[in-house]
Length: 352
View 1 (cartoon, rainbow, N blue to C red):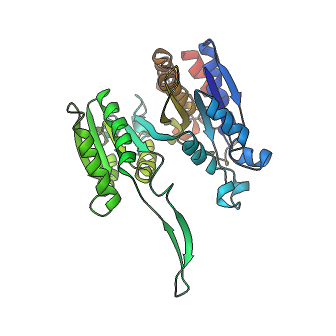
View 2 (cartoon, rainbow, N blue to C red):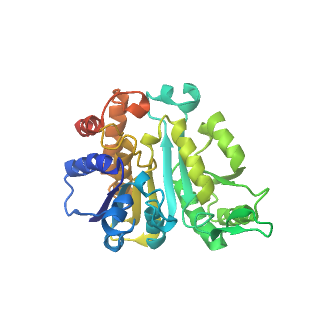
View 3 (cartoon, rainbow, N blue to C red):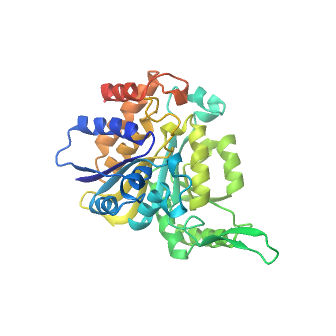
């Protein structure tokens, strides 16, 4: 089982260390780990945020375990060389089009949410975000108008096959949960969203057991704080999914608790090839201080075992160990506690 380990920048190496301790404790046979530079570390060592050797290792692996990218030293580089381009490049080169971002309120942390505890306690949803289209991958630029003003522009576009394949992921995910799928768009304003809605409705005919609803993105943002318990699976485009999944993270108390899986169509002998990462950033302000919460990284490891290696029992064990540590009050600074990175890792290992 080949895993490319890309720790990246900032707190990435610290949280990755704790996830690998958990993986080592499971004592799985046949693991082959390859560590490579990526992001700012990749640029500083090799002149590019996604060096050829790193991309080759990712392509050869059954799964990619990814920490975080982002380095203030690289902020003034041309866009193609900035650390964040590494993750976009991996998604494109590995054809990872479906991002799964679960958000669940852990028992005992209801008071950590910005929502009322009785509202936050009902959160148990999955956001399925399309990753390879929308404005993030469309043509873009800055041009000068005839009157001399500068204008920035970005193209938002989806082809129907791109919508259909992510819709299938959403419907299949809903079949394994509460059989409710909410498609989020802005069809009252955007033609891209109108096509999105039309194709999702067409695809729904193949899933008569799933209840389909539609919601405009502005209303969805409001409903996430008003009544998040109404959502089971949410499927949406790249831009809207990026925003709503970060919002959902704060509804459950901290972005330091949310894992993600980016999946493609490629199947290995074990499962679906994917890239797994916490949704938070590199947090350079606390890097190297042992303050980072590694739980989202550890939960991303669990998602990797589930989706790429079909090791459901081991994934459940990890998730239960994280929940146990949280329930026992082992909280990082992001949750109002004072547990450090290594201490949190130890707590998860003890409960594993």
